[in-house]
Structures are given as structure tokens and as C-alpha cells.
Image 1: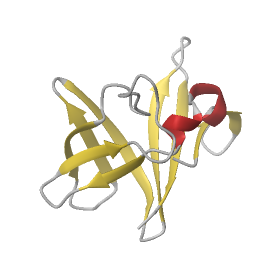
Image 2 (image 1 turned 90 degrees about the vertical axis):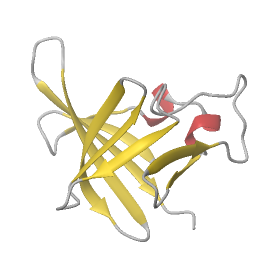
Image 3 (image 1 turned 135 degrees about the vertical axis):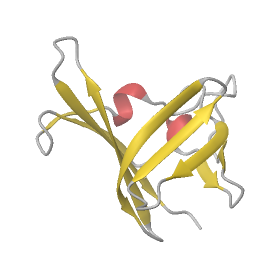
Image 4 (image 1 turned 180 degrees about the horizontal axis):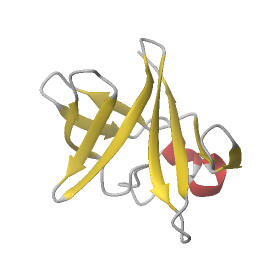
Length: 118
């Protein structure tokens, strides 16, 4: 993952959570979306100890689904499912947006940025 930025309102950056929330061992992990609709996260050069840390918490593997318009992505594991708006998806990078209300009920926009490694 390249970055996780919080916006409020959309387009107005208020906080870069990349190095605040994640350790280097989490940021260098890579993800694979298989043709069989399985989402997998792998340790890369820097291994977390204990292993199993995921940028998406318990979502280090599970099913994934993109809608027909390819602008909505859902990943899951067990009973946990998270939805993202896909704002960019090409051979070089992808960006996902997730809207989460803060404690006052105001919408905060979390933008996840990834780069392709293959």
C-alpha cells in the first residue's frame, strides 16, 4: 500500500494515516486478486512479528467481488465484509475510497492507494 489519506469533505485532505497506522512490515505486503474471486495478502521483504498483521485487520484472505460497472469492490472474511468505491484501477495502480462517519456523524473519506508490483 502506498498511502491512506483521510478527507473531510471529499477532496480536502486532513490527515495522512499511512505511517501513523501502519508499520513498514504491513506497508510492504502485497495483495493478489485471483480469477476465482479470492483475495490474498502476502508478506513481502519485511516480515511482521507476529505474522498475520493486515492492512485490513482480519481481512488477509477471503472472497472479493466487483460490481458490473467495476466501481465498487467488496472484500470479506467470515462474517466481516467491507465495501470500497473504486476510483482508479489500471495496470499500474488502484485507489479505493471508503466512507466512514466520525463520532459526530460527519462523513470521512478514507482513500487507499496501491501500486502494482507485477
